[in-house]
Length: 347
Image (cartoon, rainbow, N blue to C red; front, side):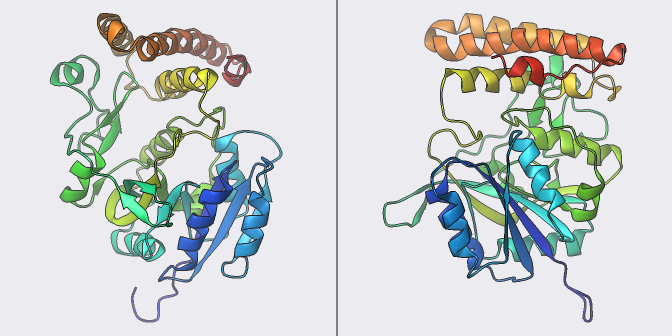
């Protein structure tokens, strides 16, 4: 920060549901931050586990606003928090992601140094030991989530995203260039926001009209990234911004692990980008989408015996999402008012 420059203020938005014990560790880590110009908005969907009491206790150490979510789902919770935010920067933090002690400071540094609209931090998979200490799990350096054949058939990045760490492909899938262990050794790169720790310009977020028709919020942040990308705004991944993402069962959902959650996740993953962005994103290809669906169904049938539940769920997700997505596209074409939530709630 330049001499005489007013320090940027950060608002941290944490949606939470049924994770009071873990949330206490997250808030404790925030109370030890090296950079103090920030406030916290905890969006609580009541679950009867005394989350509100835990948050109240930490108001002695942190500038916290408690917001009770009476209806809606996870993306609604994020933007409910945004509406209560005041920071120049708004950071989204999962309620099971424990920030390093310089997490706020490094987030602010990224905005000041690189003139960005959004930044994604690094996430280390970890477990919380009985003594309260964090144990970081080893990760493999995986260079890509798609094989060369998959890349050629349906994994081509949208033009303008070729050098992004993660990107949207013309089939509507997400292409991730490497695991976190692979990426953190390669430094700062362009990236769409994603993961348990990311931050966006507060002014942009508070002005944005963002759709909230998710239940589990599968990769909603990639849609947010597309909105920012279409406006020509710069977004990066910065490995100096660290959180420890706790492994404790289902970590990407606010629901508990059960067959309905798995099916919902599979369907939302398929509705992910293609049906949400088509036809607003002209580079998305119906042919690439169909090739992607067919190739992945054939792959799951081939390996069905190795993990029947997983592969059957994957096939169900593709087929159900295509039905819901087709209804959605027809509604868009005739200017109807159909929302995929109408069918997602029935699953």
